[in-house]
Each structure stands twice: as structure tokens, then as C-alpha cells.
Image (cartoon, rainbow, N blue to C red; front, top):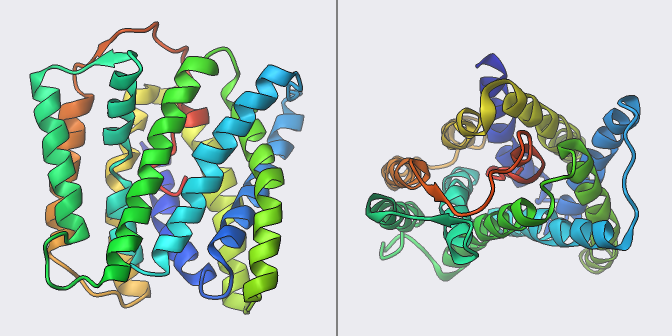
Length: 306
């Protein structure tokens, strides 16, 4: 349980690190830096455990797909969104990941939702809409775009989790995660370089520290802690971190970044969590259960800025 709280603390602070880093770097550069640093951490642990990355064409294709939809796109979207909305709101919207995971699992025939789960899905969607302020008079067009970017990251995570359940069930979690991050480092490098050359890089000691912590701790170390949680308490209990991360991120955003407290955040967050609880309870699996330890390689979290 202590490790679960530590992970929620790390991922909750990651939204603050993104907010600080994106003030001097482009969103794709922030995403690339955290992926590269996270890959370095996982590579060290991979070598210490004597594991190697498969390099056959099929596995490289899987790593590439996971790199795009599981890290490069959602990490960039989160950073882009935080240029326009608060870190607190981003964390609440990104907590919708389990809802999209359930939707895609149903779409590809991995699971079946009963009526209570369908109702929970509707409640969760309403919660996301409330948190985003849809229909409220306090949002400008740019904040709507930022909110959609944060939600889009959750969609990407849902796709990546569903893909991994189908194609990476026989791959050790640490290997799958390291392969995903290494592929993401290579794929996103040209984009990060191009956007940085066009927009410039404006570093400060605070921004450098934020990037280092976001990549090494918020991505690399957090992945390792998540794997340990799965091995110790199982995927279901380990997924409770999804509910804790927004709490940490909202508090951190208000205290450290002086972000404005909005009642729609806790109200929308509660509705979203209620929907997630309903959707994830007693679902009927239509596919073989994944081996223990699959989720840590694929579920961030993913949600969080995982």
C-alpha cells in the first residue's frame, strides 16, 4: 500500500513538472525528453536483470505501435494541453483512461459490459464533461482545445492497453515497457528536433530540473514501481492509483502553481471515478485472461502521464 501511495505522489507531481517544462520547451520536446530519460532508467534495470530486447520484425512492429499510441502521442498531447489548461484539470481529464480502455476492449471483443457497466460509462463521460467545463461560461476556445487534448491522451492510452492485451501477453512487462520507450525515443526525436529548431529552447534551472524529474522519476522509476505493485497486489488493486493521482495533482497545482480552485474539478472527478468503479467491476472477459504482470507494461496509466 505504501508503494501505491508513493506512485500516486510521483504521478501527481508529474503534471506540475509538465507545466513547468512546457514553458521553455515545445510539447514534443518535453514528451521526447521524458521518454528518453525513462528509457534510460528501464534500460539499466533491463541489463541488471539480464534481459534483452527482441529485435525480430514482429516485435519491432509492436514496439512501434505502442511507442506511438502509448507514449509519443499522449505525452505530447498532455504537454500541449497544459499550455492551455491547468495541470489540475489535465490530471482529472486524463483519469478517464479506464473508461476508454473499457470501450475499446468491448469494441474488439475482449470484454462485454452489462447494463450497470454501461450506466457507469455514461456517468464517467458526464464526469469528464463536468470537469472540462463543457457548457460553462468560463472556458475560452483554447481551453476547450486543451481539454480535448488531455482527453485524447486518455483515448490513446485506452488504445495502447487494448493493443497490448492482444499482442504482448507473452512479453515480460519490463521488456515490453523498455522496448516501447526506446522506440518512442527514436520516433519522436526528429519531431522534437524540428519543433525546437523552429520555436527555440528556453531553459532555466527550474525547467531543467522539471524535465529530469519528469523523465527519470515520473516515467522511469514510476514504471518500475507500477510493475512492483502489480506483482505484489494484482492488477485490480494496483489500478487504484488511477483514483489517487488526480487528488495529488489538484492539490499540487493549487499550492505550487497557484492554480484557481474550481468546484467542477472535484465534482467531475467524483463522477468520473464513480463511473470507472462501475465500469471496472464484474466485467465479463471474452478473451483469455492476460498473464500476471501484463498490465504494468501497458497501463499507465497511463493514466497519469504515465
